[in-house]
Image (tube, rainbow, N blue to C red):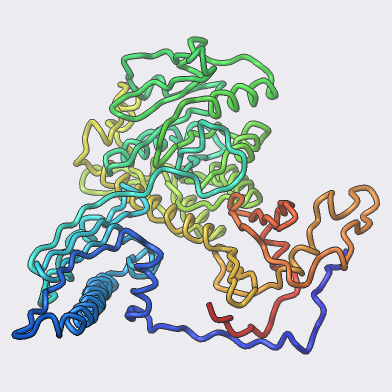
Length: 532
């Protein structure tokens, strides 16, 4: 089918906009903009009275005018002090985003009192499990304290409220969950449940609010691996929702806690049970929900991936070639569903004895997954009797022995997943935006270095939904002249990791997959920004 293009017109002569500010440096003009758009930036300056030495009645108008001028100067001075603080904080770079913390929007509630030398502000990070939050706090105190007029710095640390980055009509139970991480192997017996449970409790130890969903209805493992006091899920009869049980502060849901043990039922029924357990549970605010995926790549797995807005996946394998074959199918499934795989865990890699390291199941399955599919991180788990025993005892290994070698590996894995989820959320939230000053849609697809511009009318005309194209005949229902040349989107929101939802002035919501946006005719020249 032919893509519809915007007409070439002599008045659409564009050139790329130049950056208004140097990187890492904030101007007074920028500070004024910040203060007008963010009422949290406040000041407590005092206006000094102007005293006349004689004939006060004659000089009263002059004094009043002078006081007004001094007040204006005081305001400018305060804004300059605010600029000093923000410029100092802009020296701190977030290693995950590659951008300073001011540009990232982490600095909140900034208050400056230059007269007393007091500065107070809050750093709102993307997650309470941020592995470098202590470094941020230390550096922020240091760079602000060295300003010559600063005598006291009051800094508090916080995290963004738990909320999904994805748009769409999510079930109520999933609307306050920031990140949903799938732990998958597509093969039974490789230690997937062990990794899922220990990863979840690692997140909790990092300060996050965490839940675990055991999606294996045929053989639920969670009731064996944890020991909650209440081992039966409860129902809220009024709301018709499920109340999860808890163990050591982590919320738990499993078919094994439903009082029926393992399920004996056909696939479609299982998919319905999983959907109900996951979407009707009162999870509350969670930073991370870890889903222990069932083995395989069938209907149940596809249902989970399509119903739930998965942020990322962790792949678990063992060294054998047979494990790699099954795991490869799982990685391909996630790739087709646009779910990024961020790490590979190779379980039962080796054991140490007599001063030597032995590899009883061979080597290379994990590294083969990394190399073939480009997954960036590989973690090795050794054969440890304590790891197996902790799974049977109902206390995860990272809780039973938080200083051990296994716990250290899971801490590294936890840091990796937290950082990758933050990157993914940032990339998805900024993948497609509308720049009103140049009247163009900016596109930078996640995992791509390419950034390009699209004409809004061209995007609207290339809608492929049933409202624009006849599903049976392929005939174009939306005509070229139906779309105004100067149409502008009202809102652009992410839809999973694969598309955005664009709301147009006529109320139409267009689902635009990244693949489709990449195929549309692009703007080569960019208009100069229109003055505000």
